[in-house]
Length: 490
Image (cartoon, rainbow, N blue to C red; front, side, top):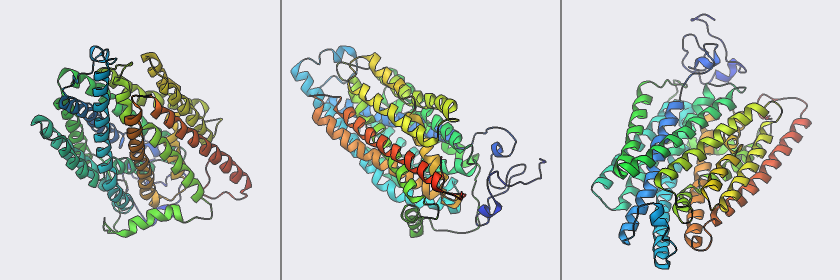
């Protein structure tokens, strides 16, 4: 193919692109800016660095905030807030144990306030920006959350440096949420990847994006742990500020657009909300609606169980008898994200040829249930780290659900689809944080692993839904005589 030639994207017809004609790049397909689809190379970086650095900034912020809030409340009670085995070894004292339980409970409640002030404003911004990006371009949805992250981390630096009231941080959280926050950032990047991938390689591209997210979490978890231990909270928050600033500049200057249209649109138009709702309220000839709902429920329940319990996991690890230090907490956070993703990538490469995507989701749910059950009974470091290896297939659940959902809709619905999926994830994560934080606060003195027992129960329900999806899809595929372009998944 010469540099001036233009070819249609594999697996797509020109009719797919008549309404929304993206900018044509020299030497590439008419519908993308990435050479990975045009024979120019197997793979090229697009939004992977955006996700990587965004989650370096976000994870270092959240992890540092968890420990900073713990230290602030501990100081209020005159409790030694350093997380060390020496401090943990005296937890057998009734008075000390009572004070520590009170500090953990108040820290947990503060993180609950942070979650709620983040999720509610994000609902409105994400629902508008999701479908808006289908019309006006993905960059218009990717950049605002980065700016919001810069503002929130900058405000946090002022609060920490001048030792201001901890609840001032809620203002920065609200500002970040109205800019779109993590919900919009993830959905926009998912839409970007779907724009430049074919149905045959989309699952792999989304898994690579998930791997970028996991590495971002891993790097920031380890880095923030060392920074907190050696330099203090201020410089750990500085890591977050630097990551958000760097990737905001990269995105504004270097990231190419995948959707360029002449049609104008208002970002706050109610049509964006209506189109998003129609995805799940109206069915098509391919009977896609029930599959979209099942996939949304599965990915949302997994998010509630895995991410929703992440706040209390930190407190669970630093409490007696585990007594993790800040560095150990960082290593666990890194391993708990990278290990499932890497193991899932290997698992997918080995078995994707003989197992359907829906069956891989079922196996992923089974491994996740086992890991949570193991973590609930953990009383040694070995058992805690073993739980991160049992989740060999859980990293496949989210990418496969997103990939299968994207194959059920048209290209001009991708932004609305991923906005709905990501919002469902974040909503259930917030609900999970509410439930798990409250449960942990009331059960920490009785059995700290209660939250993981509940988490395993939620995942068991998810497993049953995944089996229902697998059986239903197989039954529908066998009954279809004529295969339609959209609406059939493996």
